[in-house]
Image 1 (cartoon, rainbow, N blue to C red):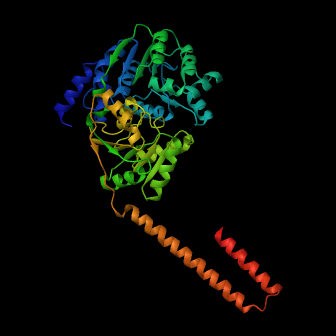
Image 2: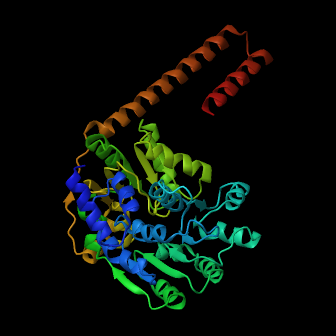
Image 3: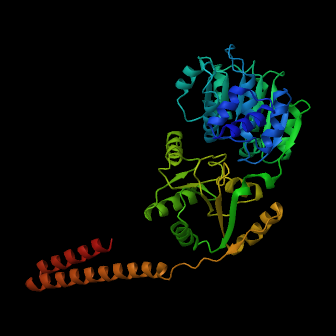
Length: 440
């Protein structure tokens, strides 16, 4: 980076109120300029005002609340000063990693991720240390509150990240209970991709004259993503996807399915095809989920087959392609999915497979986002199905010859036996049994 470029960064982030130390931390992360959500949200957050920010994932919203929090952390205080609540374990870990990058130059600032599936005793041990920033999922955080192993009474900053997804999953009662444990003097920041009635009600109930920042969808993650829709049949999706992967050769790709069952089924099919792939969904143990994410981040896995909830907020460098194996249910899910690629200024490709039954849903997504997604037909290689037929036919021929040889062998053995007596009947029974065993 040139010296002039460094001055540009300093001037842009410093003008928002960010200190020189944090600007240097941003520079080491190659963050060259504030995003629209950061430009609008950071000044309000630094002033201590409550904030409602509506923005999609991939717009830089995480740093929009992390930078002001770190600026205002009192390193001499030993209590929890900032609480960030997220809907999923993956997002909690992701935000924790971002905090650790930003505070690497600060010796006395500690952060802890609190989520289900992790050893409670290990979390309890870490909570005994001087932890100023806690990033947590609602369920495990409530567990610690019941154990009285964490005290939120002195929290100065409360962030509800991905609030719409949190309430959609059904965490409203837990979120209410958590807020009740915090000080009424806190600063509250709510970040959400959508503003559902539940989100609005939660904000109205717990926030004080909040400033509202809204980033239009067109400024969201789709800016650098080329989009494409391919019509197929549900039965033809597997062949179409495999053909696309082989011809497009993505460096890394996320493949979205509607259900956990479809994720597992497709994962097995891709694995049998020889692809380096893995699956991510809610039925996996926490240890398995963390292992999957580490392998994907380290590019040891090329294809990650996932559900929407499991991949919420997923931010992995190097994702070049997104495949919607199943069409998303609405425009918000569509934006979230394709936002897994085209990040950090890189280009990406998002391909949506749709059937005749999905045409109206695809039109609704296009209408809501005011876009027209290019449509293409994919002609699969002619030998794609015939190779399967040849394999089936060959296997059937082998089976037929095997059965014929067994039959001839039994007949030959039978002809060597004498007469129609009991010995012969025993041999026939044995042959019949062998044939039945073979059929089984």
